[in-house]
Length: 71
Image 1 (cartoon, helix red, strand yellow):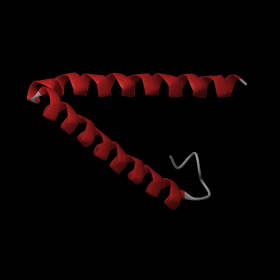
Image 2 (image 1 turned 90 degrees about the horizontal axis):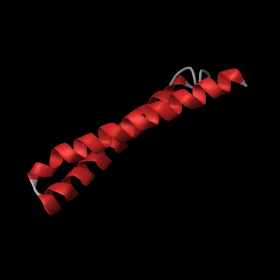
Image 3 (image 1 turned 30 degrees about the vertical axis):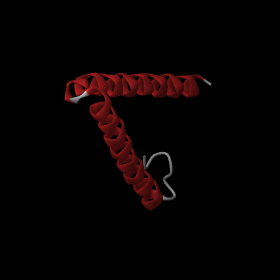
Image 4 (image 1 turned 45 degrees about the horizontal axis):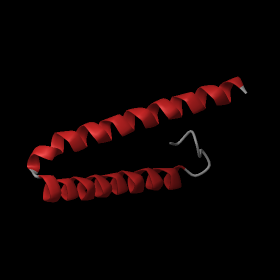
């Protein structure tokens, strides 16, 4: 994060913390919805969906970084 904005490390750090909190809030809301709708047994499904989404985002980020280096 600091490498992206070396001139404003405090801002970059605060954005990182804010997005971490946003992720916790979204995860809690989505999981709560699934628990209320489908029961507690749906939590592993939600976990695997979030893990898959995170993996896809990491792969996309890596692909974008490698394409920037080649350009």
